[in-house]
Amino acid sequence: MPSQKPRNFSELDCETLSNRVREELARRRMTRQALADAAKISISTLEKVLAGRRAFTLGTVVRLEEGLGAKLLDRTHLNGGSANGIAREANGTAPDGLGNYNRAAVSWLEGSYLTIRPSFGDKGAVYAYRTDITWDDATATLVFRELERTDKDYAQFGSVAVPHQSGHIYLVTNRHGQHRMIVVARPTIQGEMHGLLTTLQSGRGAHLSPVATPIVLKALKKEAKAHYGRIGPSHTAHAGYSALLRKTLAENFAAFLEA
Image (cartoon, rainbow, N blue to C red; front, top):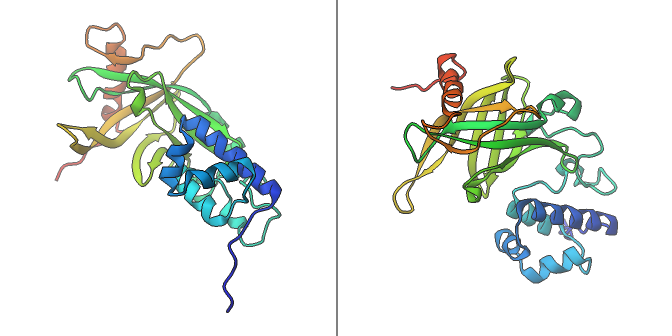
């Protein structure tokens, strides 16, 4: 069989892709050079496709998706099924890997959440920040972003999975194959989502160790005052925040098992 030529996208496709890449760069506060390095393409190639001086190819798009850790295309349309093959906006449904939901089914999750977990640095303290869950029209999925963190370099963002089977919600970060995941139960009548965070904890030097810890996301009301950062035992918010964390295990929203 004759070999297939590399797929090039139409002028409209290229403009849409260029806008998507710029949007993802702005969202991540990422430089074009950093993206070129992560995607293993030359900065010259990246500049040319973003400026419209060169058409996107499927290979370039795949590399950019890997570099960004984000979908730029709907893969179900890549084999001739769609005029432009861009995004999922036609049916507004998240991919199967995130639960096949549409916005109407998950709109109740959109909003800002006070997020509480134990402090990794100070025993007895808790750490609090804000998590925003919003709808992303470009990918037709819920996405999350962490804000109000005093350690901004470690703030996470990623995709939200809402499968029907388990009744749980998954906040997943995937950066070049390195995963961090939060699994929480659906909100209680008080607007609390209790569960577990699994991530890597910094040790001595460059040493990293897997760690799991209780975590709570509590819906923020507009008039509510939240305290962020490391909350020690002397802080006025410590008792309430600690009580929410204890509730996670005490009421069997999550459990730690030992052999």
